[in-house]
Image (cartoon, rainbow, N blue to C red; front, side, top):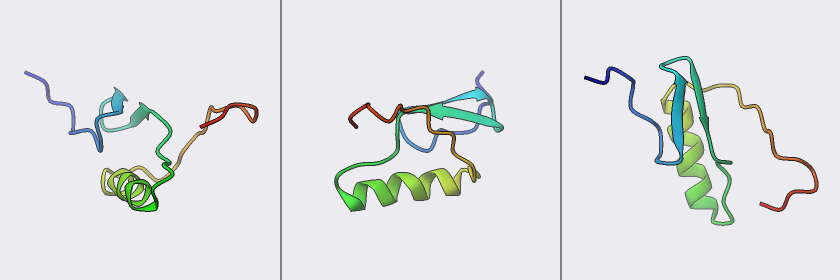
Length: 59
């Protein structure tokens, strides 16, 4: 049985359940989609984000 908390959206996963979440860049060209993803992260208790995208990478 998996006791991990639910993920905020499908492109995320728990590295350390309930403590460290990893996943795809949450932004989107559609502001509504981006806001929904960011709000889902906040609702999951995520308050800090580390962006590993390099400056020259296109999102």
